[in-house]
Image (tube, rainbow over all chains, first blue to last red; front, side, top):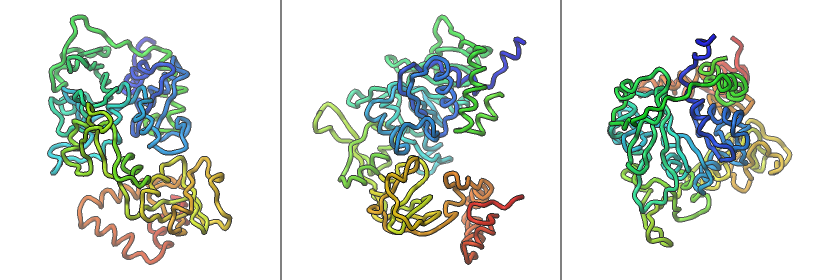
Length: 246
Length: 186
């Protein structure tokens, strides 16, 4: 009985962690190819943020606009987006993200489709939560190969928003805005500090008293696997069926 | 990018955009420049060149003979059409009655004013999807992706599906469609 409750996929855990970050009444955006944040926002709406305005690109129900994706883009540029989610092929010690190339920009080993407006959203969304399903030294690097959007900008740049944390299957890394570095905010159940350090390609500050991520509650898991899964199936059918357990 | 297309649609010489500063994009993009905000000398902003494509092509659910068209879902097509110098609409269907903006919801309306040509082209979004009419042809896309890897294999792809195909009917037969949007039952 107890063991069954502990069994969850890494994607479910990440979606539940993200749901806890969504606050009631705020405006939250989910970009393209982001099923985990989409699941998190839908879960938050069911549990504690019923009046949040949730925008999910690619959905019908969560698209309160007459126009296309540019509506979310310009809403953020106006400073009206409270929370947004970004990922990175690489994420580095200074909070820089890379969504462009691996290797040299002019002769890349791998080229991605592009930045999807992240070079504006990373500045203008009040809080940006990064998410990455792969927590290894090839994703968490000392210095990214290409800065698609920087973690830190000079004082001459208008930047009301920026990174706040990274959610991975191993831990939550928090961004210390004052000291411009990452710290171990919370360790997921069953993961050791050594495991996180081994798989992070930059020094990580370890607080003296360690926080362990609260395991998914029965209510969170149950809601995620029923109501949220059904809603998510309309937007990300394959993800909902494969990663959220029925 | 959206801002640059929007600037194009508005006929502006340039547009200021938020963000981008201190990113590597500025090292490689001649169409993005850093300037001082003329209204706030303390602040640096990025100035971007407008994007004005020579031609934009939209695939519509319906069009009328005047060039009014409906495209699937809520989209940024109007902005894109206005940014482009010429606009071609390919349509699943051309109807004799005049379409108006009121016919659009929940789809997007493209006014004849912004459209230069309409082409009847049922099944024209293949291998992409067209609203609820037909979905993405995953098998064909996979074949395309594999053949796009080298010049030779891509040449073979073009030969198979384009150069040696003499009619729409023949194309649909080759990709396994009985009729536009209608997949052959396996």
